[in-house]
Image 1 (tube, one colour):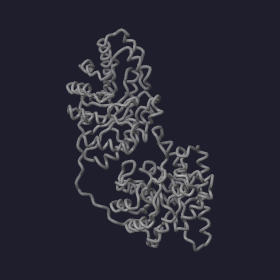
Image 2 (tube, rainbow, N blue to C red):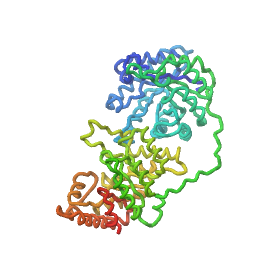
Image 3 (cartoon, helix red, strand yellow):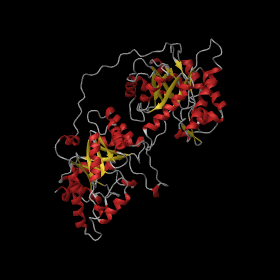
Image 4 (spheres, rainbow, N blue to C red):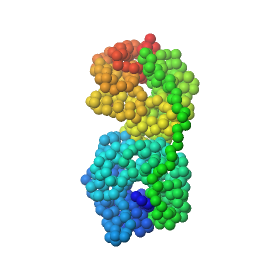
Length: 590
């Protein structure tokens, strides 16, 4: 690429405005009304675009609710339409070269998605673009490099000349949806050989994009790309519309170009008129400006990470003790405060609080933790689950936890919403525990480098083969997990599984201990909780006519026996006290 290259603008919002159906998926038109899509490509080329992108941004199975066969037909059709549009302008040998890039947007994920499934779908899209003979692939509006960094070598191995462009969506503060700053994204891109161009698109208007570009140190030897939105949409007659502000957009894009940007286009709300106005304001004959500027020098001051008091306990010979309390269902916290004060004088090293377990609302685990820490001085560790908060709320909660002194977290996917509540209540599940861990890992790098969150994960040691359990643990460790808390253990078989896991994974494990406190409680846990194995011989040690004190003594005795045969494998114990019966601690620990 010898000169600045102007790309096209928005396909999706322009298409939905043309057919007067706000929010419609333009991708389905590849099969239903291909001439409409070809006409949009043509309009962008006539406006001056010299690179167009296939109409495939949301061409994934989850978004369009299609199967793999339908997906392939749709994407192949998009490639044909783009090539037909370009062919009309390349018959004259003096015409400018018009490039076609296969457009790949983020594939919709939820808590049940696996990395392998998503990666294979991305590979399929890339294979189609390569087989169709396109010039490049544009990974557009991504929150991170999670999949891109693995796809790049695959693409280059198949076609070393394929141009790869990676761009990321940012908010007004310059952070992606994964909590990664613009500067760090570019730093990461700079380390990946094979990415030819990089930059930002969507999320913000041209004014905010210019402010972000001024602050970012872009990587050397990569083409730099900018494609902001037309602005910010406003609601008019039940429709979200972008105001026509081509002149303002063009002015800002000229400033962005003058920073050394090589590829310029538009995202949501931009039309061929925006591209035309931009071209009139920018010297497109300016040579492309592969980065040559000096990178900022390190300050020479080494960042020293402050030790985490809880994690330091694992370095001692003693078994670390975490005790779980359930926050109340209402605003009466007298009892839980009393329980916490009792535990302060026990052998508990840290108190953990469940995050509305079983999908039943309780006092927020983070707020409960901060209250207990302030009142008692105990170390605390709230559970944070993915069920109830979207990405915006989760980030806000984590920042709030941090400024209130929380440094330890247990990150879990979370129990689903109970069946009887699903009509009126929906689980969010924007991500699962692994993706949330990756998010917190990035927050540690970006914001909390000197005193990061230390977080652990749940270990469902009895669910599936040991190989699968270990594989999931390793993913959590890669995502930053420092320790694991297991489900309650009641059998030698469970202890042996944990021992085998411990031999395969170098990590800290707190083994779950949950004393059963009655015959009814034992039967309930045995029959109602999946993933918890309560043998008949444990249940048979209880009688229906036992007193509360008798049953607690049996529960404590069983707990001590389990801890004894877990001794060789456990780095500590995760003690769950039914109904917050803190009196059990003395019976168990002595």
